[in-house]
Image 1 (cartoon, rainbow, N blue to C red):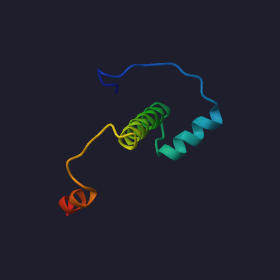
Image 2: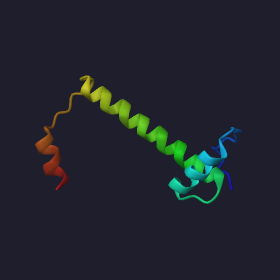
Image 3: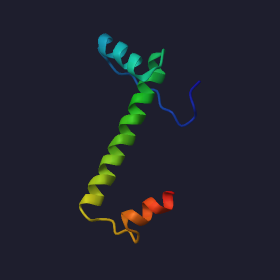
Image 4: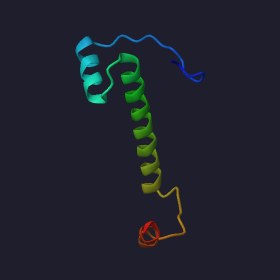
Length: 73
């Protein structure tokens, strides 16, 4: 069942790639497998961008790494 915030799209994917995608994602149906992989890819890209921004000095955190680790307990 599709959620209201979802959009249906049509894409051509090689059958062998689709089978591997289903196997790796753990999803038996194509649509959930593709949605899961795309969502994960977007999450990873956002994390990569965030990491790059930190390394480029765009963020100034008031706590040191030791203080953050100490707070995590």
